Image 1 (cartoon, rainbow, N blue to C red):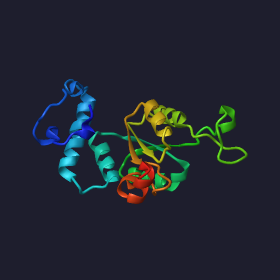
Image 2: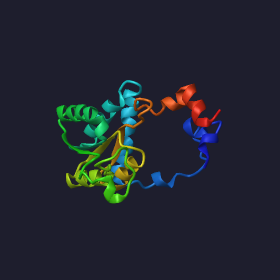
Image 3: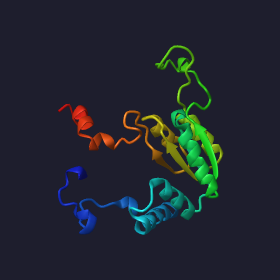
Amino acid sequence: MKCHLCNDKGCYREGKVCQKSPQLDNLPEEELKMLKTASEIEKEFYCQMTRLEEIVEFAKRMNYKRIGIAFCIGLFNEAKIVADIFTEKGFEVFSAICKIGSVDKETLDLPKLKKGKEAVCNPIGQAEALNRKKTDLNIVIGLCVGHDILFQKHSDAPSTVLIVKDRVLAHNPAGAIYTPYHLRRITGE
């Protein structure tokens, strides 16, 4: 499939089927509930809620009680604000910082930003810590590319991303597409 090359997008409103989607034929009950809940929120609050509000609403409607937050040390303040919001909304919140376990990069022969001790980010450790707390939903806040992938791979609970790390664009990676300067630099034009 190369949906990005499609000009008519007939699947959207016309019911055109380019490829059968067997993964939706026999969804497990929990996944069907997620799909339904997401669709209800989209219908009721389209262009009215921030992503943060949508995550809170989704968690409520899914009857989640235990929220996990996997965050980068560089977004400590943002993680605290999000944790406080979820706590105020009645959820039990657990969090795992990226440097959990404080394993020095030297022990894994990893490159360092500077000399001396430097803890490696530990997304697998973050996932395991939240798995032990049996979280219902995990929220990713600013994990590095690759670390976010490892976290999501090892997380027992479903996870969503609230903040994507982009140090250059104030954590707004879409800015690279919308800003001609960055787009030209990236494409080499």
